[in-house]
Figure (cartoon, one colour):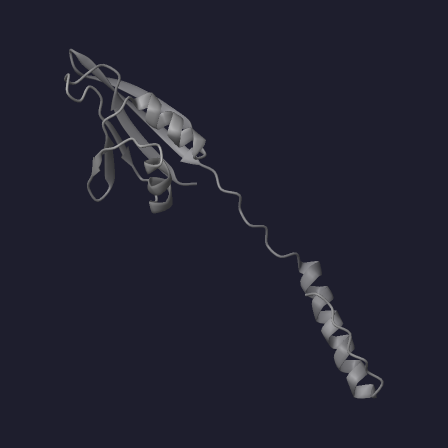
Length: 128
């Protein structure tokens, strides 16, 4: 389960860019999908900074399958608070191929070999 961290302010930093939301831990596919929400921003190697309200980013990430699993707040300055959200995205794990399917395939292969050795073998195509 990949986890990501979002940090943002709910009160304004300045009038030009009132909000700043930092998102860390996204995979390339998720970044590409998030860019479809036209959030704008800039990035470094591990963090993308969006200059929009945190609710917009949190809502977009929820649409992409992420869920908030933890949150906290810290009074960084007296005029605004920083909030952090930890989110995770669950993936459907591929189910391993059943043993019975592989045994059936092996048995069918053996039957074909045995019939061919007896000489009365008619090949019939079967899906694998």
